[in-house]
Length: 136
Image 1 (tube, rainbow, N blue to C red):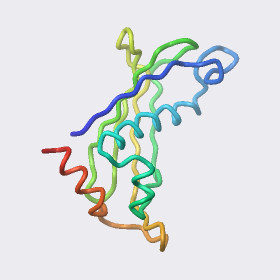
Image 2 (cartoon, rainbow, N blue to C red):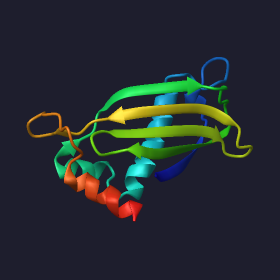
Image 3 (cartoon, rainbow, N blue to C red):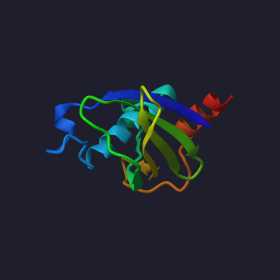
Image 4 (tube, one colour):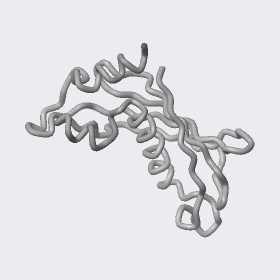
């Protein structure tokens, strides 16, 4: 398994009137973790675009364990758990100081040829080779 983490500081614009993170912002936090993982693989969004393939999210599940609050330091960890036919990542957001679990999530992405718009039923070699190299 390949894992990467990124730290987030909960800012004023992340929270609602109760000073807890608005639920919709968790998807953005997950994206920060996903980006850290893709960058670790050498396949960040610039490289992805250059490859001619995109990987839109087609499924996302978020389980809110407890609220994150204004000023809290969070760590989002993304783990690649499936990649041969689709990309599935699992996420854990926890308090960066105490380690308390805040949120669990998972997402599924599929490869799409950007030129034709066609769904790919296997992960394109340009990305698969990066994953195989990281697994060595």
